[in-house]
Length: 258
Image 1 (cartoon, rainbow, N blue to C red):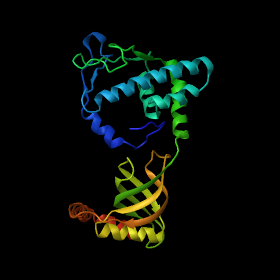
Image 2 (image 1 turned 90 degrees about the vertical axis):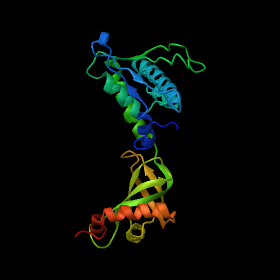
Image 3 (image 1 turned 60 degrees about the horizontal axis):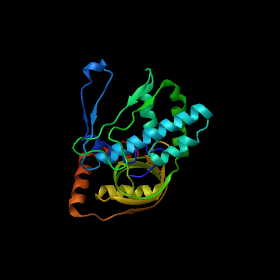
Image 4 (image 1 turned 180 degrees about the horizontal axis):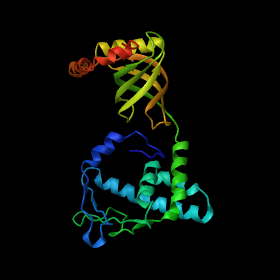
């Protein structure tokens, strides 16, 4: 779904939906409980996910070797193009820390066979505790270097909060379109906060422009401008109004307290 050094909340819904189709088998009896088998479906995007994971692990292994030999981080930067990211470095660190090492092996479905360009039994990828400093440094580097993203969001207001009856306030949106995140928080000036509150009262989503900040995991929109209510079909509006009626306590927050 696109390469990035740090995803944060982006694509989380798609990732969680993919995990629902993944099966985890019991640890192998011969391994003393140290082996875990995961089954990924061939159909839909399962094969593509496995291919990307394998390439990303190989790229991380090469980068770790380069870092241990030269001390340089350039190979970690290049590994992003192969699918490496902060989330993957964190996962590898979690597997390795407190152990003598971790080994990842992949086997293709016998019925489907290997994808073009891949061996029937790809070489396993191994990581050891000596790789951890470089992996941790790469993860921090990925977060630091990932830029904020200009977006135009459409979302339903699900929470309003400000400290008094006037002035700026904070709004939480359930994102309907414009970014691959579930919710964002936005600080609005008094006029835009009023528009967002009115849209919430009549069951309309709003459209807003700004920058999706990488700090905090792409969960906050900064520099928000152009807050505008958006018309939706009757079914969506009825659902938004029902949600509003079920959460009347938000009114107190919108008005600055009880």
